[in-house]
Image (cartoon, rainbow, N blue to C red; front, side):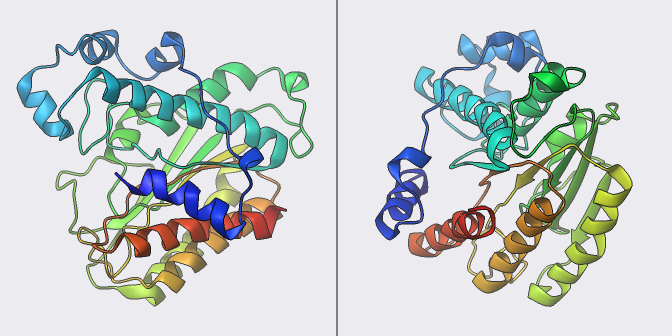
Length: 293
């Protein structure tokens, strides 16, 4: 949990970001959350009445403060999506809560931030392109691509959009990793344990350009988990910090070159040494500054 405090401190210390680059999110509307999650599930979170078995699957001891944090994370991704329409890119220091389903949470995820923001964009901008005051974007949002490169499959995201053709879900994850019962994304690429940089990057570079060409998305959500690292306690893919950095560079450069706005959520990172996690996440921000600004 401490990475969420240390990461912005590191970005400010090294000069990658300035205080003006940061914003603190408001709280999301209930309507935005209910565009993705069921009323019964949301009420059980807000009232802390979720049953013990469901709470165990989430993995956190639930509290009012934790639910408020989760709501702010979701709103941060919503507001970041609006910022991306202005500036081409925006980042959430947290987020990537891709194990949250419509009606339940799992794996430390309760509200699916990128799913909520995707529905927000589709509801707000699907037909009213003239509402968008943007230097980089001049079309209505009718098709969204979610690029989930966390080491764990985005099972909740896959379930949420399984019957929604306006959102295409792409998950590239560890074949032998959690969740052990996978859902069906629009495209799933399962990477074998121990594959390393070459295999991982080859699969990504074979898939992403073709996918973007076929789907022609108006907006991309990118989940940039650094739990693919060889040092990660939960990862097992054996990618280096440089390999993880090249992954981020490739995705962000492609979004910039193709003029597709992108919102980035950080996702997982569980290396025993916190400095490795911070450096790997900071690389995503460093690259964004270099590519976009």
